[in-house]
Image (tube, rainbow, N blue to C red; front, side, top):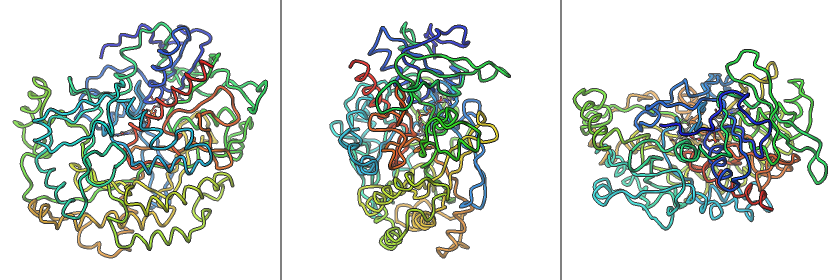
Length: 609
Ligand SMILES: Cc1cc2nc3c(=O)[nH]c(=O)nc-3n(C[C@H](O)[C@H](O)[C@H](O)COP(=O)(O)OP(=O)(O)OC[C@H]3O[C@@H](n4cnc5c(N)ncnc54)[C@H](O)[C@@H]3O)c2cc1C
């Protein structure tokens, strides 16, 4: 990392008093939009305000080092989770230039076409037409990424397949590769899934993210190091004279003025910011001539809006914040992928495997040397590159019974009792879409990452949580409630999802590994016993928080319209993971980049008009 930016700012005295565009959050989406805006408008100024620092730590670039370093992440304690035996969990999101893309596991996949088509459907009239669908987003997925295919030898060795036309062809800042190494045992697990009747797809990123799929890592093909928002969208453009990045500062709230005309009640005219580590640091106002763009992520953008008096009345009232604009969806509709692990002792596992790297010093040293000298070997691996993505029908004979139970549910039964009627209306449309997605053979309900042991992530939750300001201290970290399993059908679905491991590990291929189940073990047999175990063992997050500033009309609890403009407030958009109305069946970073590319196009178009 060489911070070439002459325009990195660490103190407010180094800033201009106003900018054309101000972006709150220099993470995955914020840096993508900043890159595009500074390129499109060389004579307009852009300020990015980022809470974290510009960090030159080589561990960030090293693919294998995927355990997030707490120094570069917010670690917020969630509320007690009633569906998970009242346990609390750490909410981890990036706090560094690059945001979550600097600390994530680099698994760079996309959801199924049906997942993105559902966005347009739940948002309603005009949204699909505005490009909120798979067909509308695919050009942005392509644009965001430069995919370097594996060499013929590497592809043959690992059975890597891909389809350039269906999924790739762009030249965006984010690099994607299939790494030049996989552990030999993973082939066996892929075959085991095939033996259960789960077919292998040629390309998982072209809208068919179901079955056994390969997906790339967000990684540079030349250096085999992490490719992320900073390397892809900041380092090479930081010396643009119209670009300032202020680090170590938080956007507290918005400067709002009454709108002079049109449909909006307010106009964003700037932000109020504060140094993060200066005790009692003064609050400084920076004004914007064009737009304020919120990119602080699904966990922090709602707070900026709520502290500005934009949000649900009851939340603002409890915090004594005067209501500027009642927007009930802000901080609601919170979704993530819950995950858990079973544990198997593979008594005849193939060597070498991931464990042998840690048990065998010589192998570790060899791997280190190989990476340093050739950029090959185990150290080129990040979180993994393949998984089984299973629709409900593949999983279970009970699928129709679960879908019937869903059809019989009233939308209001399991949301928090303070849910606003418009948010409830939006959720009722989500449930309609969920009935289709759960019935579909082409949309995954569970992900089983291959190479990560017996791990399973739940991709289509029905429960919804909240992320609201703390009424006792609105500038403190938000109150995060995942509300996992508060809709009781979720634990029933999860039971189907987790039971399949016992079938997987009795397939001929998997049996060659000599699996012995350690957890949960023989004591767990009936569905009721699985449910009890799941409530004890599930963690509510696969690090994919979304949905808290959802796309959709106000009448459906939406926060942003089809152009990502916040309802009722001029010059204000949200461009981060919060805009996803339904969580797609995939790790979320590539979707965030695609949304940010689309957002940039919309902002540039408006700026030129
Ligand atoms: C540990 C971990 C592992 C993950 N693994 C994967 C993976 O393998 N594959 C994948 O596809 N996805 C993964 N994800 C998810 C993915 O990285 C995120 O969905 C995506 O990067 C989110 O982008 P964003 O722009 O919405 O938010 P972020 O990238 O989080 O950006 C938000 C930025 O805003 C800053 N900020 C917050 N509050 C303020 C404020 N008040 N003022 C100023 N700045 C503020 C933050 O410091 C941060 O830099 C992972 C995430 C984590 C945390």
